Structures are given as structure tokens and as C-alpha cells.
Image (tube, rainbow, N blue to C red; front, side):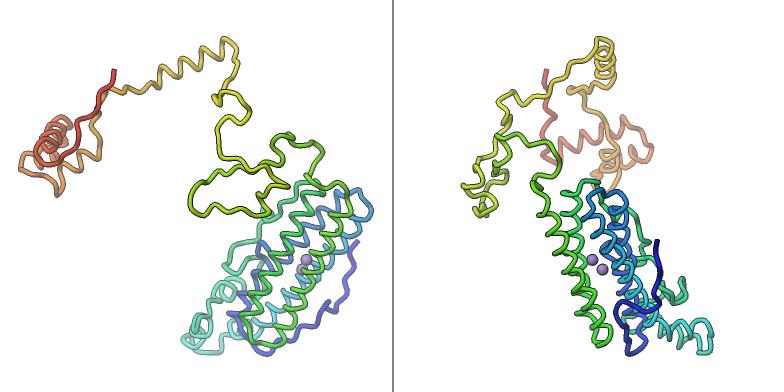
Length: 329
Ligand code: MN
Ligand code: MN
């Protein structure tokens, strides 16, 4: 069950109304790295988890993320409070209202006009929250790695938001929220390493002859050796096709019926390498500014494909040095 305590996890003290800043804060309310995404990510993982330790950790952190959602949502609501009053009471001139909503780099018209100053479940650009932000796959070694990355991204967004405000109360609350993501990242890392083995994720081993190979697939200036491809861990190999020792050409065995259908389709869709078809581009080239004489323009105007083709060929012969189409048998 959930029970609610009316006091916030961290005290929110906002110095003054700032609807533009409120909009930026929405990134951590309804954005991909935001608190709602975090809470839903860990809550759904908790529901499916069977390991008692991980299950407990996931619901603790999911519930904390909901508390963060409440903190960041409260910051948004506080920053919008003045504007919300103004827009609902309408006791300023239209021009004054418009200036406050859209002036001075303040692009809060979406939250002001559409949401009346309340925190919508959108990101800072007004894009609605999506369950697609959550990439849970149902394997703890894969999900914990993704959770670690999600906490890292959340930390970075908080850092950017902190750098964008000089409101000391907002800065303080954001710094707390950022700090908690560092703590969560540590818990997820510890939980990952407490499970041995945890690499690679899943149960099946990789092919031993390729598990520790580094293929130098991009060749040229900038080729660099480092721990990510050094001997000791990796066998460093130059790019080559058919590393399995086979032909590198795809093969499939089909039933006679399937093979017949595939062949029929191939015959029907066969391209003729000896053809030289007229194209819309040739017609356009012929009738436009490139026309060398009246006949060309006339042919294009009459939309006579053969006339246009004759003219295009005349152009080729006289003006351009386009090579004759190559014929192959
Ligand atoms: Mn959080
Ligand atoms: Mn977190």
C-alpha cells in the first residue's frame, strides 16, 4: 500500500515567481530522465522482482522517486503560482499579461495557457510523458545497468538545471535531488556486483572465439589503442569479412513451393540493364532554364515524352559532356 505524509521529503523554498524557470524544471517532472520515469521504472521492476533484497531496494527507491516527483512538482507549482493567479483573474491589461507570459526569454505560454500554471506531465518542451522512456527488460543484470545509466542521466539534468537558476532555495532543493541520484546510482551498482556472475547479462555464454576480440572496423587517422581494445583483455584484429571461415554469402534452404514463389517475384520485378528510360527529371531539365532552343521548350510544354527525349538527347550531344549510357550484355 501507499500512505502519504503531507510534509515534503525536502523543504522547498522558492524566492519569487518565475514561470520560465518552472518550464525548465518540467524536464525532471515529466521528461525522460525525470522523477516520474524513475518512479515508474523502479516500481514496475519491484513488482516482478523475486530476490528479496532487490525487491526491497526497488520499492524503497521507487517510493523515494515519487517523493522527488512531489518535490520537483511543488517547485514548478511555486514558480508558477503568481502567474497562475494573474492568468485566472485577468486583472491586468492584455499587453501586460502577454509580456509576462512570453517576454524576456520566458516561453511559459504552454504551461500558462494550456495548463493554467499547474505542473503538466510533459518535458520542458511540452512533449507529453511517455512509458517508452522506461526500457526495463526483466533481467536484473541488464536492468540494473540501465538503472545506473538512468540515475547518471538524471544527475546530469539536475546539474544543468542548477547551473540555470540563481534562486538559492531552488538551487538547494535541486542539489538535494541531484545528490539522491548519486546515492541511488551507488545502490544499483552495489546490487549489480552483489550478484555473481553478472556479466554478460543473461544465462547463455558468448562464442569464446569472439567474446574478447576487438575488430578495428574503422581504419585511418585516429586509430587509437587503449584499455577498450588492448591486449591482455582483447585480441586486436583488423576488419575482415566472414570471420567464421565461411563464404560470407547468405544461404537458405526453402521448400519447392517457396522457391517457386520467390522466383516468380524475381522475374516479375526484374530490372532491364539495357534500358534507358525517360525520367521526370529529364523532362524538367529540358523544359526549364536549360533549354537551348524554342523546340525544347515547346516539347516540354506539350508534355510529349518522345519530343522531350529527343530534345534531351540533342542537349546531351551539343551542350553537356554526359557519357553515353553504358550498355552491357
Ligand atoms: Mn529522484
Ligand atoms: Mn534516483
